[in-house]
Length: 130
Length: 113
Image (cartoon, rainbow over all chains, first blue to last red; front, side, top):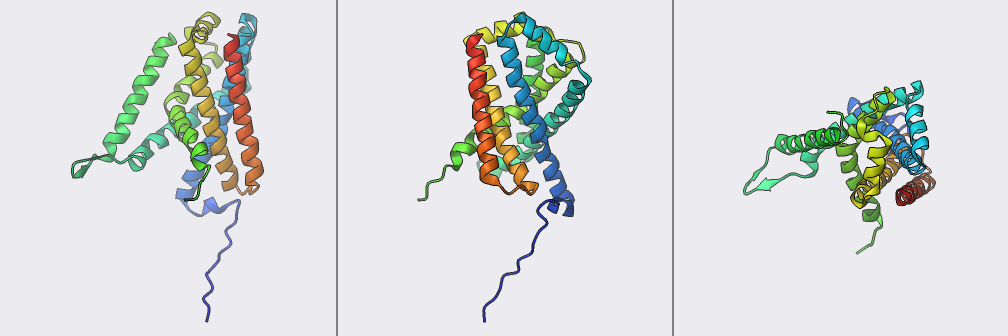
């Protein structure tokens, strides 16, 4: 007698609605859309920068359109959500053992948050914002 | 042992994910300030052009943009799959080619500065 494995067909386009955990996973996946789009904007920015002061000034003016403002707000939410979830995951991805004991996960994630805060402040300082 | 090309894709993805996590929020904040009409002094043509004119500045800009592009391409590929788009080879090829073209273009623009 052969045993047939149970094969369940999962709905390929809405499987993630079955559990809040899947939904959070997908929320994080969706941030890649905005981050990816922002990367494209950065490539365009480099093109404009290389094209001279007039082109750069036009680029800065174009950034002030309402669509750009909405896009920036969405990209900012996505970037912060990605960063937070990434740092929270570091304690699972890179557990650190000293002697017999594992370093508490909160220290590992906390160290990442600390470095992130310092780096961001340095960038803001260099850019003349603070 | 079976050889896999996965590390080649995966390493820049992990490096890019880290770069995005550490750098992207503050970059978007700078962009948002510009979008609000409060252009940070560091985003003025003179400052940014001066930064990009140096070898170190070029390397930082290229590193951040290229790694972020590659990581985003890989993540978008996974996102497409998770949303039920199963033409993985086609989508992966398109996204990785786009990331390579974007990185090459960035390098070219930076060399012109």
